[in-house]
Length: 82
Image 1 (tube, rainbow, N blue to C red):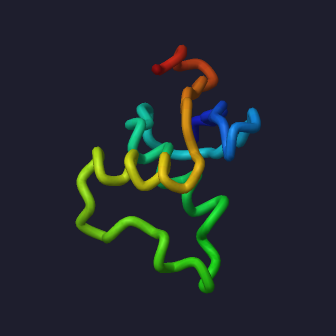
Image 2 (image 1 turned 45 degrees about the vertical axis):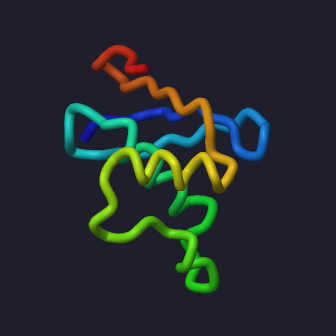
């Protein structure tokens, strides 16, 4: 397991969120999807979730529309990604 610490803005406010994944890398659109689920993933907001077949750019655009921007992450033992 690898710990990824996401730093991002939600509605303009700086936020941090950590998650553990088995994968070594975290593509930016997957990080955005984790944050969309975190902030909007309850059953009442299912309409704001990206489509299951959404491509990475669509996921990132949906995150931005939902107020999730400036996503960066740090992975323990793996360095930093954009």
